[in-house]
Amino acid sequence: MFKRFAVAGLAVALATGCSKDSTSVDPNGISGPELSAVRSALNGSSFARDTIYGAFYTDLSIIVFPFIDRAAILVDSAGDTTRLVGLQLDINGTHNDSAVVAQLSGLLGWRGYSATTHTVDTVYFVLGSGLAAPVSDSLSTRFAPDTAGTATAFVIHQAPDSVVTTWLARQGAFHVTSASYASSRGIGQLTISNGTMKGDYHVTALLVPDSSTSVTASKNFAGGIPTLKMRLTGSF
Image (tube, rainbow, N blue to C red; front, side, top):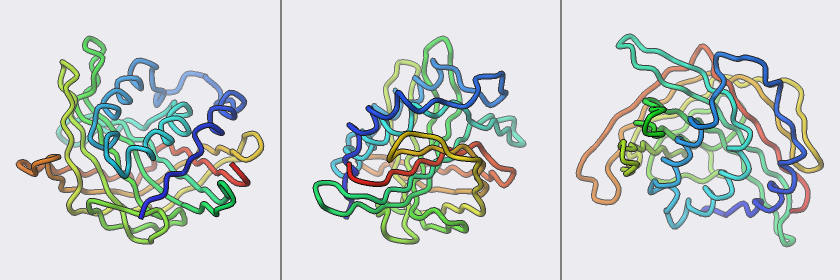
């Protein structure tokens, strides 16, 4: 159902040539240690070790994460602060003479970063199919980037001692009401655009692997969050 994109090598070669936007002061800017803590939580999660998603996560971590430098700060009525960044990936090319076509939208969120322990309390990772808004996907345990309406989500808790616990979506929804971008930049087959995504998500997830506990999470980002779009074409 799920093809590995097999683009990691190409991404490494191109990444050094794709500069980020200006590094001027930005309230949504992410420090290097904080992003490293988020990646550490993801690396230790069941998502990264999943037999289907693990290979995809390896590619995603190389292609996308090096270019994430901003995430919106959302504060709810209870004072809970969450950072959110949108992701869109558009692949239309060939690998070993086979067509590879995939379009997906998603978001990465987290709360509770500790500069003392270098951990984040909770990470939210949502993946859905399609790019063109409106995207309206139902959450379940699996998704396919070439099947409209499918999506999944992971809720990841990282303790101060860095022990990671993962919950996988069983129900919920992911909506993208709009996404807009500035001009793209890049080299050859890989282009990158920064923009804004609007929408919401809600998820009910069960503990991996024994489903003994459940968690719920939701966030409305109708005001817009920073979003990174990456397009890969040609032969890789």
